[in-house]
Length: 219
Ligand SMILES: [Zn+2]
Image 1 (tube, rainbow, N blue to C red):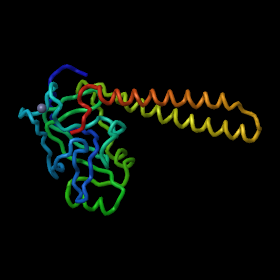
Image 2: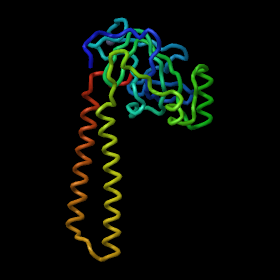
Image 3: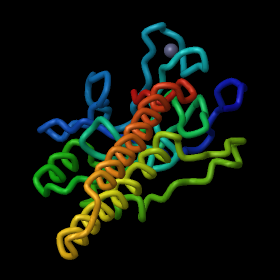
Image 4: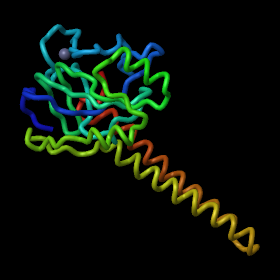
């Protein structure tokens, strides 16, 4: 992360984040709770009372650069456009102001509720389509070398390993059942080893999600 002060985003910069969805179509911050975002421009409010996000304070409207990082709490994925003074991190940013650009919701009735409440927001049926039509913007011109957060990397490794483990386990069981061969102790050892590696990946994922760059808490 750069040590410079907040950058001023002259135009709008796209990011991704999740929202908790209310039954009336309101899009709420998923972690701290609080009121739904404004249908127009949402402004960050800091309890300390200063203007705009600073590096020493965790306030500001959070968005990740890449949709793969926008996971966890919240019901829906949205692309947002941030503007004004913005703290740029390695994986995401905290802005003084932002507006919802597009949101992905599967349920038709909920989509209608969001459209009624947020007339300017594009409401799409799938996250895949949202990302395809609202792709990540390059941020290298702002002096940021954006990377996926370590949490995302560990999560991907976890899923890959889990898939391989499940496939191996069942093929071994099938082989032992059909041939009458197979050493139960060896099978047990393989399962225990697999669980240990998965446990380590989960621990790393949780550790990194609480320690990366001080700006990973969605607001
Ligand atoms: Zn603050």
